[in-house]
Every structure is written in structure tokens, then in C-alpha cells.
Length: 339
Ligand SMILES: Cc1cc2nc3c(=O)[nH]c(=O)nc-3n(C[C@H](O)[C@H](O)[C@H](O)COP(=O)(O)O)c2cc1C
Image 1 (cartoon, helix red, strand yellow):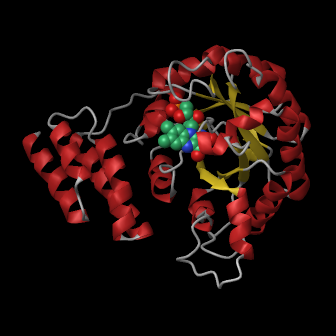
Image 2: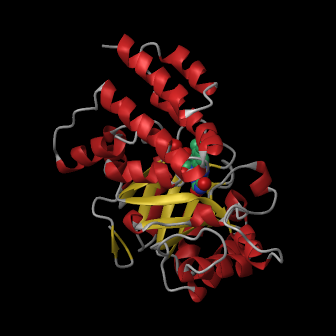
């Protein structure tokens, strides 16, 4: 599939995941086959305000800019913005495109800017942002129009099926967003009311795909290769975005890619699993410093330990880890007990 002229060969993508899809995780997802990745959601307003701050902006003080940083080797990837004000969204898009802003900006601009119209969190929705925009299609389209007028790089949108069962409007919204200049739509087949519970409705993905000319990515409940192939088959979507299925399991992309091209797939041995988990923790510490890196590693390590014999006790232990050596010891002991 293509987003404008950007090729995503098999349409295999890592979804945006706040607190998860940072540079370290994206690099592992890419290594194992993700052809396209999306950053954590970034507040357009915070990015703009950080630029206006009167005090000198040091790299340590900027909290938002680092979330939007992109390395050369990560392309093609999208940075996802959230916000409800067209001016801020357009300005933030310009900052990203120019890749010249205060704070830790990356080596290159993102290939794509994605707009979050799916976040269900109360504090986001309460500001009219994220999935609240599904209830305001005119504003949603105005935001996309302001952004596509402001930048040359493609603007894409990630939406949900609708707000709740009584307001399933993904098809109408997708058409409006296409008219406003969006280059791709990703549909998460749940409503805002569902949050992340229940099943994703893939039928709505199919209906959106039939209604628009731009490419459509499907999202929701892909936890193995078979799920991905079924979604492509049942919805006709151009690509798939994997979210929770990749947590603690970046190999899911290798599994899906193998199935897509009809090759056999052998899951990694425990030793390799653990080696990658530890590499992930080391990357987090290198990129964010020991304190934040270890704090953020804990949930990832717990995911890597999922379904492994003796994993429950090890999961408790990683939750109390305060250093890399703690984590290395916990994984080392578990490996020794799982010959
Ligand atoms: C921890 C977490 C963080 C998420 N952060 C974002 C985000 O920043 N932007 C976004 O558009 N969706 C976000 N999502 C939604 C996912 O991208 C995805 O739409 C959803 O999890 C459904 O896909 P899945 O069934 O494959 O998990 C998040 C989901 C989770 C579980």
C-alpha cells in the first residue's frame, strides 16, 4: 500500500501506543518486520507552547518534543498529534515538518503526520480531543484541512467505529476526512464507549474501505498472523496496525510477514526472547536515563514474561527492580530454571 508516494510494502504497521511505542520499541518492531510505525500521541498544544516558553528551553526541560523525535533509520514513520484546535494542529504539523523546534528534535521530520481521533481517555475527551472529535465531524474535517493546507507531508487520521453503539459514524467521518485532504485512514473497530473491551467490529473497517478511495488500515484484535490475514481478507483493508499484540512480542511482525508471503515461521526460543527483552531495557535506560528507563522497563519486562513458566514470580520481581542488573539477574535466573 501507499500513503501518497510512501510505500508500505505489505501494509504491516505498529500502531501508536502512548507509553509504549517510543523509539526503543519502534526499533524492535521494525527489526522484526513492522514496515511502518507510529509514535506515541503528542499534544499539539504542548509542542507549540514549549516553543513559546520565555525561559531558556533546555533539552532536559522539554517534555513534549522528545516524543516527536524521529531517527533516519525509522522512516517511514508517522508522528501522531492530538488536539482539537485547528490552529495548534496546523502549527504543530509545521514544526514537525520543519524539524526545527526547541527541545530534542529528531534527525529527520516524520514521513507522515497522523491525527488522533480515537483516544478514549476522559481527560483527553473532556478537552474535545481524541475520540471526542468523532462527535464533531465538522471540526474534525476542519482540523485535517488546516493541517493539509499547512504542510506538504501526508496527513492521516486514526478513528474509531464511533462514539457509542448509537453513534457509529466512521464511514461518514472517513469520507469527510478524505475530502479534507487525509491521505489514509486507520479504523479501530471499537467505539469510544467500549474503550479497549469487547471485540473490535471489523465490519465497520470493511464499510469504510468501500466508502473511500484513500488507503485504509484496519486495527483491533490482531494477536497473531491468522488474525491479520483474516482482517485483510474480511475487510479488504490495505494494511493492518498491530497494537497490544506487539507488547512484549515484537516478533508478531515476523510471524505476520511470514504468513503474508507464505513462509514458515519459527517462534523465538526463550533465550532469544530474553535477550531482546534485556536489549529493550538497555535501550530504554540509554535513551531515558536509569531512573525513567527502569521505571518504564517494568511493564515491558512483565509483558515479555507473559505465558512463561515461573513468569508470575519473575513479573513480581521486575516490578521492584531498580537497576538494569536487577532485571538481568531476574531474567538470568528464570532462564536457568527453564532449560
Ligand atoms: C497502552 C495503550 C496506549 C495507546 N495509545 C494510543 C495512542 O497514543 N494513539 C492512538 O491513536 N491509539 C492509542 N492506543 C490504541 C491502539 O493504537 C489501538 O487502536 C487499540 O489498542 C486497538 O488495537 P489492538 O486491539 O491491536 O490493541 C493505545 C492503546 C493502548 C492499549
